[in-house]
Image (cartoon, rainbow over all chains, first blue to last red; front, side):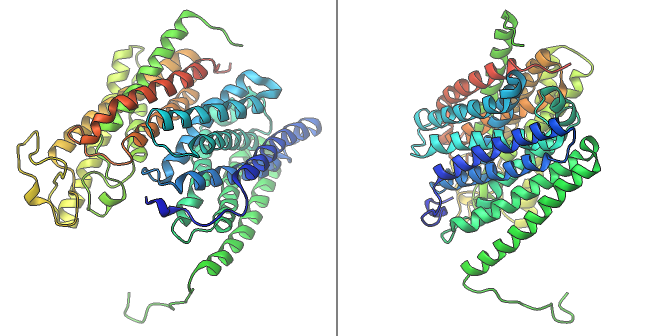
Length: 268
Length: 230
């Protein structure tokens, strides 16, 4: 990847998106857990899914910021690392933290991300000035995404409940990959000299909605069909809306969008 | 709740050693990235992390299978290493078929004048405008060693985590998480592409050892404190 992979000047700064992502993500997780617990239902699982989309936005912007420097390994590597860091640390937070679990997990994941950034810059000598901040943001985004999608499936932040519904059933594999792709795919698909921030971020909303949809599908056996279908329905609406918006931006940024028509007879 | 005892120090050490194996193993795997996918550079045409994850996950599967019949650490680690080696070799040989019979290029290295293993001259076979193509013998052998180290490292991490939390799902995914962090750090060290142990970039290994040791130590301390539930 060349140094010219990233595009123009960002309209929304990474710092701002990070604040929105952390507040939105943690708020979604706690609201889901509290409302589901208080009303003894699973219908509020979609709130955690909405929080996850906010966190994925912050992760995607961090990927965009750091990959613009040309890390040499391709965009997927940094997305996978974000989730790798987020996975271990977020479950540690949930297992020791009780009610404060998600916050402990996110804070630790961000600290760990910062440390990996320091190692990358000081030991491996990558010398990318935004590395520490970007990996810190990515660690936090990975942790919120994993906890959030787990909460969508289990309906609460209880560690034992998440173990039973997400880890032991193997749905962790699904949300690990769906979350990773949601974070790394938008910049990977949009990169190039003509990359624009709004197009990448709108694309991120659509991939985040897909991750939420998958988690909603996985929640069907645990939260009942009503709650699962509600999450999936909201995710599908967000996906259709954001993808239409994305297509509009693609047409705006492209030099021309032309229909080629069908193949001529005998062309197959 | 958190209980710390002497065994945990051993488990943390095992995780650090496993992380180091993964980090060093990545340096042996011939990764060519996007240029190799167009047969313009030596190595398998994908990224380090994809290759490392592919072989590492196969290693975990075979280690898990062995773990279901025995508790012997050596057997489990060897089983994981063999699984990862088979996966790596299958990937490289099918890649070579595509390069040789599909693209129509001979496997050749651009980083050395003579293949250190077969002693075949390399420069006459390099297509003009490329930096080698396919997976020559030395890269193939190197990739097999990379699979061995990656699989052994991954299964060592899995084994030590299984002893702590006795939950296969949790241990497997933690192993993947630790594996991915080390593999990505190592791939930053080689800046994305390497041909194998004959590549000049291989001399950067000491840096990866420092980086992976530090990262594995911290993530290892966190991982051993997590309980596996009831």
